[in-house]
Image (cartoon, rainbow, N blue to C red; front, side, top):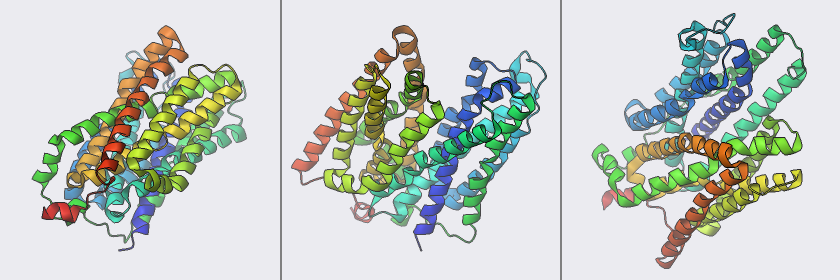
Length: 422
């Protein structure tokens, strides 16, 4: 089987997911105006992006071997086409409704947002084990290349949204309500293009069984991997890496925007560009030169340095420099954690990859309100310093693991056939 086409389908599916993330954030204020929602109510509207993703990736990751990768990806493609339509055609109330969650337009909006979250989980639940299966000889590198298309999709979605804003004059004061509404509807409709694209790419394409199934590892043995002490430890590390990577990321944009006056979407594009270039072009060389654990240790050092630098910026130049260091540092956390999971615990198959993805997403939901509280109580500087403790701890953890494996002959990926025979 030609492994390039399934991998390309995975990349386009992840681009769709990232575009949904960036466009959803860009149109949020416009949705609040049209549907008469305050910030708290908009937060409720966004909540399915977190718990819907977590629920979906856990269920999808557990059922990949039974339902098949193709069915789940087709379902996600259809969902990514239905969800924007629900949001676009949701009826808009003429005034605020109390209670707001009984209003038909809000119900359709919430359903559409939930569907976006579920589709994101389905995509992640499939593409990670699919990549680990078709590139079983180069998992960490290929997972980094795959996840380069997350920031790649953020760039595509962000630039398209910014372009539509400029072309339609949506940022000009005093525009009509009709133009503003049509603007966010056009932006949401962009999701139909990549969703349909990877759906069409699956026509006639066969998908393999996961690596675990091919090696004859039973489902019972797969679930046993959850209880291995080293995996439990790695699971905790995922909470810390995800909190370091994605928690501060929500506040870096506003910080730099306040200092430079740049639109937040352009800050997103800038940091996403750093991540794309490093994941796509540098991950393989760095992972092979330093090992995945060495790469994680380097990432932790740079992330800590970036966060503490962000806590003391005073000028736009300092802000951009600190954001660049932090952006480069956090780049390799998510895909490399997944790569090590697949390489060191291959008997856990799609289930362990799904649990790691779910853990990372739940960590974000946990750290964001904490950072918000620190921000309100002590300011941005203290919030960044508090989170900066996590990569300091991770530097020690990954550094010790790197030295341990080096003393025992070096880090090695476990080959599943050999593991099954043992």
